[in-house]
Amino acid sequence: MSDTGTGTEAEALPREAPPLDDRPRDALAHKARAEAVPPLLPGPGQPPGSGPGGTTAVDTTPEPADSGEAPGLGSFLARAAAGTAVLTVLAAALGLVRDQAIARYFGASDASDAFLIAWTVPEMAATLLIEDGMALLLVPAFSLALTRRADAEAAPRTDTGEPAPDPVRELVAATLPRLCVLLMAGAALLMAGAPWVVRVLAPGLADPDLAVDCTRLTAVTVLTFGITGYFSAALRAHRSFLPPAGVYVAYNIGIIGMTLALHSVWGVRAAAAGVAVGSLLMILTQLPTLLRLLPLARPRFTRLRKRASRTAPLLGLTVLAPVVLFVVSRQSQVLVERFLASTLPAGAISHLNYAQKVAQMPMVLSLMICTVTFPVVARAMASGQREKARQRVERDLALAGMVVLLGTAVVLGYAPQIIEVLFQRGAFDTADTEATAQVMRVYAAGLLGHCLVGALSRPFFSSGRPTWFPAFAMGTGLLVTMGAGYALTYRFGVSGIATANAVGISTTALLLLMGLGTRVVPIRARTVALSLGRLAGAALVAGAAGWAAAQLVPDAVLSLAAGCVLVPAVFFLTGLALRSPEVVSLLALIRRRFTDGR
Image 1 (tube, rainbow, N blue to C red):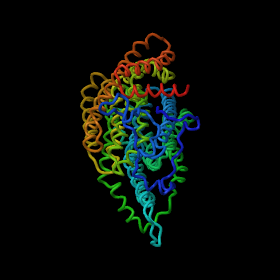
Image 2: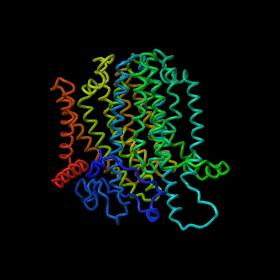
Image 3: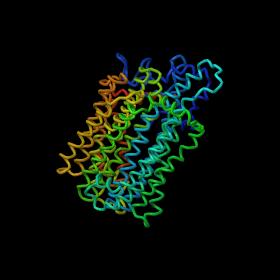
């Protein structure tokens, strides 16, 4: 998904950057020369797709040494994005295998609905503790601690009789033990209150007792996901991206293995047990690398209060509350959907789930760009380099938008074929395919909004200062989702729920885009919106072409294979005709690479 800028197979996957405390001191002394990146959008009077000096939008070639960019950062980020892409695609493929196994053995039934209600717990926990909440809090905190460590290493040393405290270890000692205690209490509380949780989430569920059993099995993820998210944030701040990217590979392996091994004995409870097992594997996936990069010393309890006071500005309540409220509001869209769908005929929750999981794959792939570059933005903000942060954010928005809109075009054109190839077997019949494909096309209308919300929220929280605007924007979008859902569900069923989701998340994305430039990073919102508008036009044309061509090939596999060629070709040709800077730059870079190769 990202150009690596390398010419050897050995560089296809990223090498972990060394921890900052292992780097030469003269490099640490120049930390203020931040990771500058060429801007994505053209400046005044420049041709589309070029930045200052003619730098292309997707160029990952490192800048000269006098540009202020850390040597090799561009190629490292490209390799990191490539490696993350490989593991993200593998995790997504295993996720499809996981969903196929559940669909094969349980179809769209009362049992699958009960499991999906219980799965709401790990879904919310993953968003809060791994994907958004923990990352938004801890990546800036670790980045600031690493910056302080670099300052201390670069400053003249004085003999004080005892070693200088390490800000990174102090941060870990002051936060990780307390976090574990809090998460264990939350998991125990959820197990005890599982019947009440099920009644609140799905009052119309046909088999609530089964959902309660599954919820108690998945409640352990409150603890395990929290530890996973903590480890992921620490590793990403140290620019180690492969272990965090591999956690969902381990997670899905656990679910698939338990489902295949025990479905005949435990029924759908086997899948819920697999969630617990997979979450433990997520921790083990990252633990060796974490211990190598960040050896954990035994905490000195006499100094714990002092360490906690030093980290209070990083992880205090005023910073924590806005992040938690934003993440909970975002995940509450799923709660609203399943609450409304529980009043519809059996299988409605399952149709929504399968459609959403497949439709959001382009969004997940697009956000890996922002995941890799988030520590770079956080370091730039910690060093006060707002202009370099702006360039990085603008570049990320357009690159992520191009990826997600290309995927949206494929979903619009070939939704029935995708669902038939992936799920139509066993208990999942033709009627389920038609219902799920219809919902998935509606979901596709909100994919750009989901992508932008994920990409725009990171800069808001990158400075480590409290900001309530993302929570306000997400709360507004949630109110729109609830109102539209209640208005549309009775008349349009699951399609009305999906429409409400698209409208609500798009409202949030628009508010975040308008508010980012005036509050945090001075991005050019109008220019970014124009660029995304051109890409959206190309996606609509490509999706329409795919929709028309899909009916010409009866076999679903062959039709989908042809669409994977047709839709990208139409997308890029239309983007070229609309003079989209990202498409022009990408095609120019590909042409230059082929020319250089000859």
